[in-house]
Image 1 (cartoon, one colour):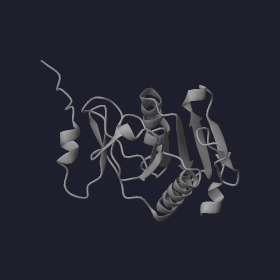
Image 2 (cartoon, one colour):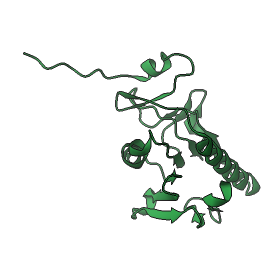
Image 3 (cartoon, helix red, strand yellow):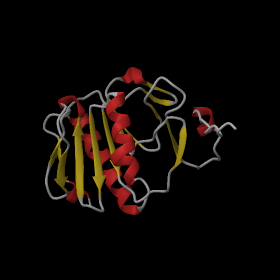
Length: 180
């Protein structure tokens, strides 16, 4: 007797979802996304605005793109994510469908339904794809976990009332408690 084969989904399956249905595709498996709550949206908006203003004020060339925005990390049809905030510095990675390859900087704002995904699955996915910096903003724990993959160092945990320095943007420091 043969074992049942698990279905491997592709980008086409994501695009075939009903209008307004949000999901991510990781290694051929579809993960449905719950709508974000108010605090999640406030944090995401404020972080996008602050980072975007910093880049603009410093005549930078990176682009800040908040969710929903498609990121195709690998050169395959089996992985598609929508980080809460993607910062892309190489304009050649952008096309009409989204970002092809790893953004330089990703921020995920934890929701109750995304906790395991943000801390574990996506952390592994982002480090393997070549993301330079990854922040996990956790309003339930009131802290931000920062991964600086280029430095090959242990993650740093910052309470919301402490400034978080960005590794890839000199002099950019953000205090999450100021955003709430």
